[in-house]
Every structure is written in C-alpha cells, then in structure tokens.
Length: 122
Length: 122
DNA sequence: TTTTCATATGAACGATTGTTCAAGTGTTCA
DNA sequence: TGAACACTTGAACAATCGTTCATATGAAAA
Image (cartoon, rainbow over all chains, first blue to last red; front, side):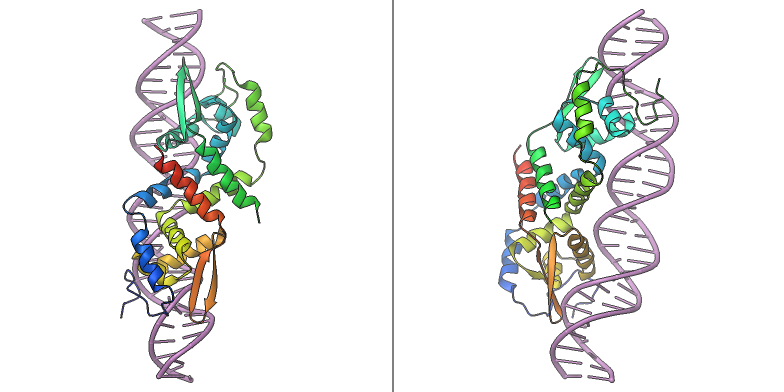
C-alpha cells in the first residue's frame, strides 16, 4: 500500500474513468508545452502588467507615459516591460531618447478579453 | 523636477499621445476589474494547475486519479484544487468517499486554447 | 464501534516575485 | 564636450507561492 506522502500510486477508489485516465496520460502534451503555457499565463497574472497591456492596447506609449498613467516609478515599469517583452507580448522601437512600446500581436487583446468574459459572467 | 524614485509626474518627452493617454486614464476599468483579471490569470500561471485543468477537460476525475496522473501527492493536488475552486475554474461533487472534480464552465478550455494558440504560432 | 480509505487543512520550509534604490547606458541639445 | 533626459539594469528587500509533513474530517466497510 502506498504511504500517503509519496508521489501517488494508483488509488483504490472505484475506477470509473480508468480507461479515460490512461488516454489522458498518453495525450497530454509532452515536454514543455504545458509548462510554456503556464509561463505565458504567469506573465498575465500581475495587475501592473495587466494595466500596462491595457494601456498599450489603446495606444503605443513611451515608458514615462506608462509610469505617469499608472502612478509608478519608471524603474518598476521598465522591469515589467522587460518581462512582457521576453514573453513576446510587447515590442518596442526607439525614437531618439524615447522608447515606444506597443502590443506585439493581437492575440494579447484576445486573451485579455477572454479573461474578462469569464470574470464578468457570473 | 520630479526626483527619479517617486511615483512619476508627467515626463518631459515629446507628448505625441497626450490626448490618448488622457482617454486611456478615463476609460481604464475602475476599482477591482483589472485586479480580478490579473488574479484569474495568476491561477492559470502554474504548470501543476494547468495540467490539472488539462486532465479535467478530458474527464471528470477524483483527486487520487489526478495525483496518480501527475505523479504528485494527494495533498499537493488537493491544495491546488482548492485554488482552482475558489477561482471558479473547477467544481466538485461527492460520491461516497470519493470527490469528483470537473471544469466549472467551458470558458476554461477556451482560455487554455487561446494561450496555446499564442505559444504555437511563432 | 473501530478500522480503513479518500480527501482536506494548517504550519513550516525554501523558492520565486515585484518593487525600490543606486548606478549604469544611450541619445539629444547647448 | 558636458549637462540633461529617457530608459535600463543589478542587488536587496519584504511578501507571496507551492510543496511537504502531520494531522483532521467524512464516509463506508468490517
């Protein structure tokens, strides 16, 4: 019998879904696919980053504009923009001293909207 | 002049988007809407929870099934199921000793798929 | 009733996160 | 060139997170 604090062996409860469970195990995306998916959502999982994306959906904006808009320091915004850029959610272009950020593609807004739909429907 | 480590005052960079920025500030959802949105995505932002949701999309399942499937302890799974239930992403029903979990609504799979689309398109 | 199984829960732990602070680029303008 | 501006970056910090361990609950079987 499996001790309780080990990675689980097959349980003894009535196995209604035994066959399906085997299927799921075989069909579950291998390797990093689900890990990458979690990482993507983790980037969306912060209200500062959400507000940045929300702002950039309305217009391309420089770092100081975003900082002013969210009432935060440039440093904090810059750190978060780096996270967003690494996740390919935003892109940037330099124009003299100023760096303008914008959404990288239209998936971003779709993902936000999908989330909002879940929240507002209750 | 604003010192650098204060919540930002209006910057001096060329204000191309000044008008739009004001608009965004007015139109940005007030109160908790964006905070709630971030919290929703934060729940998706963990690979254990993503794998649980993936499994439950295939079939209703008991806790020990999920633990076996993901090769984790029942305790760890139970803790995560609580998070998922609080976020209204899963629901459960008791049948004797066994508690069966399933996805709460079809938004969940839509959100997962939307994320996968972003990842796979490169 | 007592035992057993399935699950839940609270405390504790290391690991990760978001912000701040201080210092660093890189560009423009005088 | 040198000052000023827009932005970036690394280290440090408190706060939060996910898992483990030990224990508790709830239901069925003995």
